[in-house]
Image (cartoon, rainbow, N blue to C red; front, side):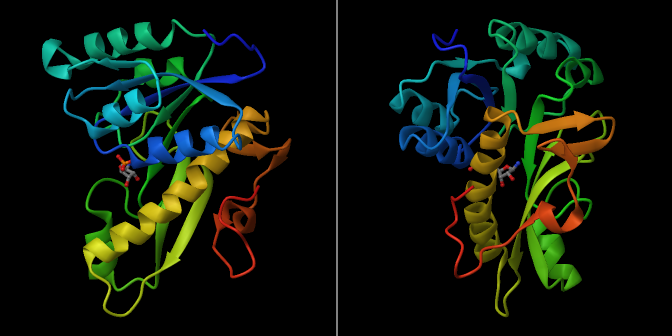
Length: 228
Ligand code: GRF
C-alpha cells in the first residue's frame, strides 16, 4: 500500500520488453509523475520488463497463464493480486493476453491500454505492416480504456506520426514506440490529477468531453515532448 494516500497507486501488466513501463518509471524518477507503481505483473517469467521494475525497486509478480486451466481462473488470480491495493489504476503495457469480460468490467474506468495504431484503425496485431500495405500517410498509437471488445474501448489520447518514404516496419515501430513513451505517461498524469473520467462511452478530461482535435498529440518543433 502507498504510505501517501494522495499518490495514485498503479499496477502495471506486462508480457515483454516493458519500454512503456520504463517511460512511466522515468517520469516518476524525475518527479514529473505523482504515482506509485505498487506492483508489476507479468504472465511471462522472462519478460525484460521485470528486470526494469526490479532495477527501480518495484515489486514484481509472475503469473504464468499456463498454470491455470482457463482464462477465468487466470483472470481471477490476476484480480486477487491487483485488489491488494486501494483502487489502483491498472495499466496494460504490452500485456499480450485477452482478458475476460468479468475482469474488464471489474476495473471499469480504471483499466487502460496502449495500442500501436490510430484506433479505430488497425485493431489487433501487425499494425505497422498493415499501415505500410495500405499506404497510409499517418500512423501512431492510442491510449484507451479497456472494454470487453478488443482494442475498441474509448480513446483517451492518440499520438500521430507521419509515415515517411522508405519507412520499414522496424523504422515505423521505432517511431511509434517513441510516441508511446510520450503519451502514456501523459495520460497516467491526467489520472493522477483526477482529470480523466469515463462516463458511459465518453471520455471526460477535466469534466469536459474530449474532442477529436484535442485527442491527437503531435510533436511540433515548439512543443517539448513531456510537457503537460
Ligand atoms: C507497444 O507497442 C504497445 O503499443 C503494445 O505492445 C507494445 C509494448 O511494448 N500494446 P513495450 O513492452 O512497452 O516495449
